[in-house]
Image (cartoon, rainbow, N blue to C red; front, side, top):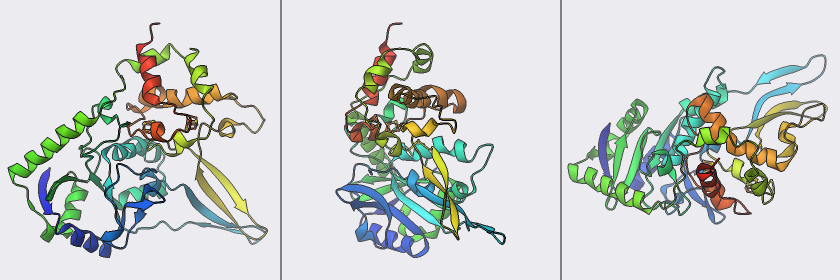
Length: 341
Ligand code: SF4
Ligand code: SF4
């Protein structure tokens, strides 16, 4: 890992230089929230955010994506969607959201490779920004992670007052930084210490903790426990928690057509919706909201770790912040953790 610095004075020029050769996604103000958008000028960027409402997963795994176009009839045809090779940089990803890609990667880049996700992933440089001020619902430290971790990004920026400390984490990050070498200088030890001090302060600000130790084994014994029904009575099945989660990755595939043309389209889906598991026969293996809510928590804390060796939750806190009925994953899972069985 290489540590560099860039002064805040030179930072706007760096961003405007990157924009000339990369499609640059960065947080911008979006109707009172923060969202990742392509920016054309440094001034469009808003770094006063705690975190974006929609995680940056939406950049690599698009909410709606045309897979191919169809022309029906005797002379009909199928035209694959051209895969873009456009180079992108995603700036100011929070460490928890970067971990979301680590969780989604085995789904799209495992035994069967999804060419659209792969192209987006390969062509994007992930540039993190440490959280100096975590939100009150953040809990990344529960998983042994840190609000200033560069583990899942190519490059990590940390605001250390007059400068940014820039940690180059991967070969891809190194190649990227080398393109803009004139903006960076090697980091003196005092700047590295300043980052470490910021990280310690940020960790202290995270007040919430989800007790993950032994939770998978505990859940193995709790499938029929009434706690799931208790929370399902509050849930309205809106799907907000799944749509905004950086690790949720389910989708539906539908054909859309008029008389003379059509398209096969992939759209995000959510296991909180009743149609999600509906069979063509009309049978639904998760007919009640309790089944769907229970599945969401089992998927994250039991099934996914069993299959992929990682809990499918990064502690971003979005499902707590945005659930309209205040269902709190930390509260629920800690009750599970502490349950005497
Ligand atoms: S956001 Fe809350 S109310 Fe909506 S589906 Fe999720 S748990 Fe239920
Ligand atoms: S389950 Fe909730 S806290 Fe965990 S990653 Fe998803 S949105 Fe964030």
